[in-house]
Image (cartoon, rainbow, N blue to C red; front, side, top):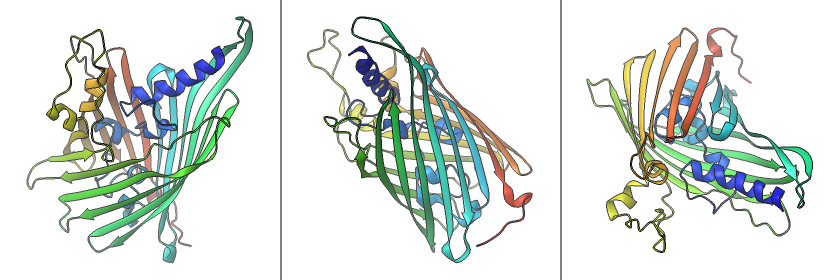
Length: 338
């Protein structure tokens, strides 16, 4: 019984710490922002075009020919000693278009198991992985994309698999100073569940975003709305002994938004700053926010390589740190089209 309780707690912990609608769905690990650009911009980005191969995981419509040959390796040091490793690569297959592939693995570490009498049964590990394959297609100023994800969750011998799809679209202004993106995430079904009595649900979401770079300004502003399939996502318990006030209308609306800005010093240097209102409201301390919901990061390029780091603020107890190395293989490997 204690073993099962620990498993449930582990799954619930991941969903709540990201500030999503926690405890209602399985496979919430897919919502953890893992690459520095997304982490540094508040945890979500579905509209920044053609600059980062990692963003094809956020919105497959952001895939383009300019990203072919790009490969990225990411590491995220998350809360509670949770570690996330991921990689993304895009390749030009000639007449078949440009395709991308990604792998994301979350390791929760090792836990000690006990029976009902408190006798140790040894250790068990827990981890979750998804593999994605997709492509994008450009139509003048519009781009469409789709990706298929195979999901596996393994926690203390309990296993579950699922199949999901992301469908995205994007509008890119001809001058490149405005982009809008829309994505329907995690449309799919469970192939096998943890147990016969379990009824796991995929973390479906609808996300809409826009990125704007004003002319003659070294800034790009990004606004992303999420959880659009559900109106009120604010948690409020009227029977709570703390007698907290019910969130107002403006607060409830803002919990759907992430705002971010990038300081574009040059093509090779980039600073990022983001704010996630939902995370701030749900994870701040009673008397102070302690950086909850705020994130920042930087990126710099040296020839064929790009290095990035970001920190995401969740709680006074800690945050996440994300690192990535991205390489343009076209600059040092002979490119082949199939």
